[in-house]
Image 1 (cartoon, rainbow, N blue to C red):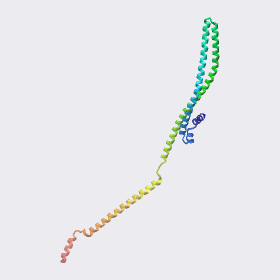
Image 2: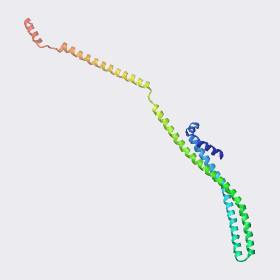
Image 3: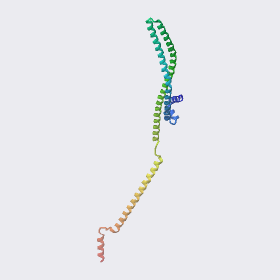
Length: 225
């Protein structure tokens, strides 16, 4: 029992950050320590019952001896008032014996009471240590949760896309634009070529300048053709 509560005392006095850094899983360790301490506290209470019961029994015997002495004292007083000194003397002797027993029992009661007080103080100390341990557990769990959240946030802030990926994307984008420009240029060449062909045909066969036909007919007439 002492080992567990000594360990608890060490943990309670320890710095939370030290516990988090020195133990792989401090939350689990503390929870298990509390469970072990609670079991030991239960055993201690069972063992303390005998000591506490002895105190009660010793007190009862003391009260009984004092009550008996008071009873014989009252009887002696009644006998004396009734004029029976012999009966009064006998009653006083019984009172004296009861007082002697009470005096002896007083010492036994004081011893059992001291033992019971020690046990009660120890149980109260164990209860307080368990309470402090639970409070420490809550503090450690809160600190551990904050540490985990901080680490998670740090990971998120450190995350990012590799600069080489941006460079590769830029090169691919430039290449795509270049291919598109080339395709558009090719298309423009094809359109211009067709237009030039159409213009040549039009010039060869379809162009009739104003007055040419009339001049040609007049020349043929002049030559008798």
